[in-house]
Image (cartoon, rainbow, N blue to C red; front, side, top):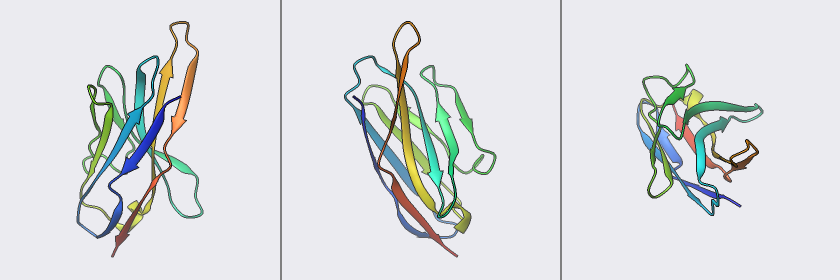
Amino acid sequence: QVQLVESGGGLVQAGESLVLACAASGSALGINSMAWYRQAPGMGRDFVATILKIGSTNYADSVKGRFTISRNYAKNILYLPMGSLNPEDKAVYYCYADECAPKGLCWYYWGQGTQVTVSA
């Protein structure tokens, strides 16, 4: 069972930056991909960014050029430096990870979330 613990959320003003981190532990098969999602009040959970085991990345259009996902593979820590934050970025940010067995069966995990609030 993989445990994901996020940190780094907080309250900032528009234009400022934050760095989120997610520490993963307990993987028996080796973590495959990791990602960040976010959920604004009253809304569904939306994709933010992902990084695959091979290192390739993908971003939601709304964060391209402002957020950068990275991963420390040795320590199994996922990072999300966020720049030029605006009030639309206010949400609970969730860390996601998956691990897969050789025959393709995969397990999916979520962290508990960390709150990011951006004041205008």
